Length: 74
Image 1 (cartoon, helix red, strand yellow):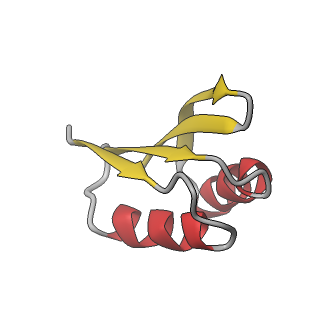
Image 2: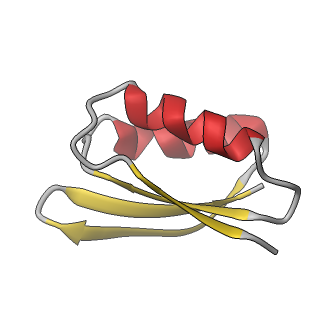
């Protein structure tokens, strides 16, 4: 299993989601993508996208006042 990190802190929506989609496309089934972001709209957009694609959110934490980390498994 590969764990890839994606840091999109300071990027405004929809770029965190666009970057996440591109990164996930490079991964194999069972791999995980750890996304660090600070765009509040992505707090809903990323989990919704993951659910629509059939991916599993294995971890989701607020890591600061306006920063989050979400782990999505393909």
